[in-house]
Image 1 (cartoon, rainbow over the protein chains, first blue to last red):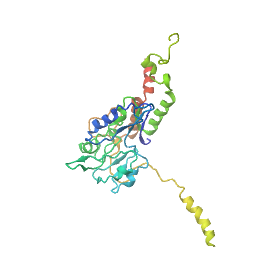
Image 2: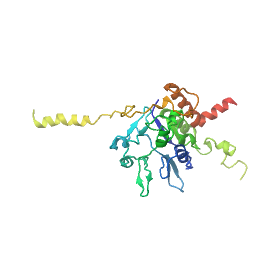
Image 3: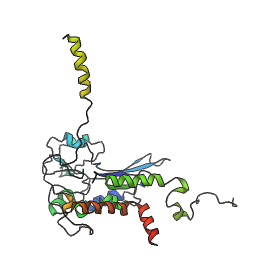
Image 4: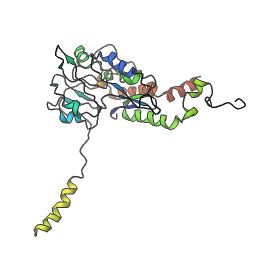
Length: 205
Length: 83
């Protein structure tokens, strides 16, 4: 198996935030922590694009490089995980990450910064797979249940793809080659009745 | 050997030393004990169609799940064939 990877198709993302909701619901992520976010560029103007961002499980992860207590580790599938029992909540990983993936829950009256929390590619943590201890610290371990990340599986337009890098790349490549543009776009004929819908009909003004 | 000659020998070697690829091998990068995902989860939510502990069946199951769940071109073509 190749490395587990996410890719977001900005041509398809409609900023519905179902990936964010799916993640929060699946892992019961606390308030103030967003393991996944949808970023919109040029909001409200022609050419607007949205993209769903979380930990990209980098092959050469800067968070791993800067962590002073070495709490990060990488699984055989290339998923970057961390051990909350080792994390000291220093925030170095947050500064190093170009995607803003590491999140810190604020707890207590003075908003004390807690231990780092981030996307686990739905692969849990070092505790026993599927255990209550793992769920409470890291959320569900869907990979060990034979499932793919909830955000990708719940994406309404399938903009967000997640899984084996080779498979995801093949799906994306096939889509880009086939989707065309304008009335050629896949699904246009289903939605509007004909492949030429949107074009002025002949004989009618 | 003249110092200038030494510089001419050492300088290209120093430049070439920078031309290496850092290793990017997969695998556990440190000694964190974590159960591999293909071993299965200790709960009742496992998806059917694969055998916990069998890496090949787990990988195949995830590939099939990705293609059927995320590649609608595949789904549509399969539906066309079925109907």
